Length: 450
Ligand SMILES: Cc1cc2nc3c(=O)[nH]c(=O)nc-3n(C[C@H](O)[C@H](O)[C@H](O)COP(=O)(O)OP(=O)(O)OC[C@H]3O[C@@H](n4cnc5c(N)ncnc54)[C@H](O)[C@@H]3O)c2cc1C
Image 1: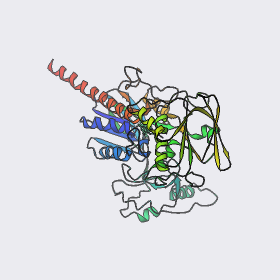
Image 2: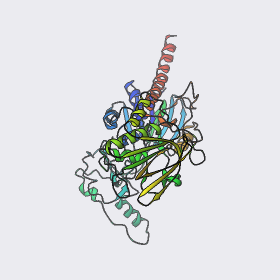
Image 3: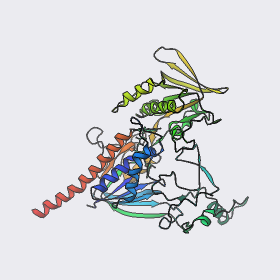
Image 4: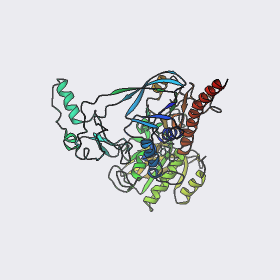
């Protein structure tokens, strides 16, 4: 039995699993495919039902991961191959080239100040830009940059020269290299395969939001945005410093419509499942919008509200009490009418057509399994459902075990859920790993005694 675990995915569920296994005294390798751990929670302005600032409650855990003596953190990395069985898996992890030597880099931030290449920021869900050499957000762990080779001017220039291509040469650059005070830029750094032996694996790869383009009847306008974009707009540390602005003209929207079940519970246009958190995060966002624009009007279109967590129904009631109007109905179309957007729906309580004029619309898009989940499942030899969420060994009595012994599931990788349930599953999966490791100890102790 190899008493070392691999956790795949550094969102709140994977972070919790890694910390609990490491605190239990065992070595953990945490693999995260983006340049920083934190996952989606790190993008939010405040979190329901307590309206905590996520940075205040998540950042300490991220820092603990970065500093824990039992955790090896591999960011910008992905699992490539797995063989073996519970207790003794051989895993091959692709460490993508960062082109920055993290042993030299001090994280001073000088290098990205003058980078001329601009790319839509993944962290800000496309509503701002980042540079080609970057850390995704100020609280990133590790707080050291990577060079996005697809957008770095110098790398594109070199590819152009070496490829002997014809046409206009891309501009030369290397500004980051000139600025770096410790010589940490490493153009020669290549992708590497890291091979490890582990006894257990936790899959915590999270979710992606359904792209709004998949609902063209709602989304064909710059003032129609998704829930994560709105979170970034509400965030005091976000690109608008918490000022709610309509994307088309930067004006403060006086009327905002929030649309729940945008793609969820809709097998025809989206997915059949309920995404479980949209009712609550739209209530939160409507409330935060009213806090930011007290004379503004928020409307929420809903099919029915699902508020099954502790304190959730009370939170929804508070949103209503603070002036948000709830309209029971499914939105059929959103279209531009001059300066306004028209949101058409049917009020299922009165049976009447409803039309609401809005300056901006926020879609509560469906939660999907994270990109590449089915491929990852094939590599791990475990099952997913049709939507790509990892399948439990038994949905009721073994909800944390995957379909393969020694591989456990945590968080939204298994299905849509909120932060408390993701954290609970992270701890649950960790306890399964600790149980497996302890079992082998007690078995070998018994063998010695007998
Ligand atoms: C707009 C919005 C607002 C929300 N607000 C709240 C709220 O206020 N309160 C609340 O309780 N819940 C809220 N939620 C739900 C919350 O986001 C989730 O419960 C939580 O983020 C789940 O954490 P996770 O770790 O399972 O997944 P994620 O946060 O998605 O993290 C998964 C991590 O795995 C990484 N990853 C993915 N694939 C791989 C791979 N193959 N290899 C390595 N790494 C990989 C990802 O990069 C990511 O870092 C909200 C959801 C949305 C959409």
